[in-house]
Length: 228
Picture 1: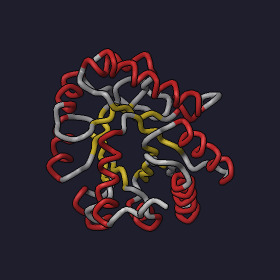
Picture 2: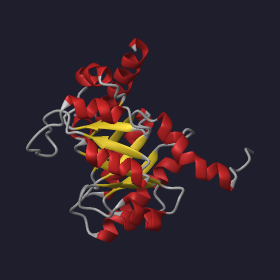
Picture 3: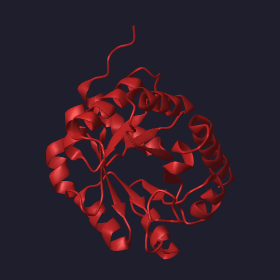
Picture 4: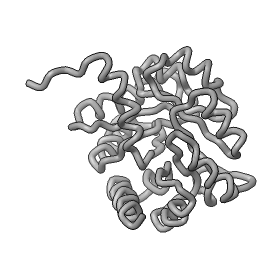
């Protein structure tokens, strides 16, 4: 029987897994718990390294249940396991025992989220310009989501991020995920800016076969990395 990880090893695990992650998939909780579990299981099976549970409509108790479902699915998978992050809801992330939370501009500041989650869980931040990216980095965020890079079918944005900002964000000393309208064909353009991590939603979750779509992204990321 393999030995159990030590406390120090467990505290390092989320950040070591984050360092290796190149794809984040945003998943809503949906209306049906069984369907949600099946979708998460498919994405985990595809090898998605980071899942962000994002649902602004579910009641708190239902959202908490969905996050716990996702964690249960992940705990059944072989290593390396998939990270589970909760969008916006630091309280739900803490209560469920998720790997962390992702913060937008109107959410809690990083310092307040850290006080709730503790030092070992991950905190991500969305940044739409370099000032926001620098502030999140200075406050101790573990990773950034930057964009929107392209027109998105999930969220409407008045403007897209300029390429100078994206290239500057890529030089910051923390993982940076491009967000907004990303499809596999656009990965070389992002790689040219220095960004080799992406976060997607509808391009995977609304596909006819989400598991196959996730695998296609993972394969495309690998192809771009080999060419670099």
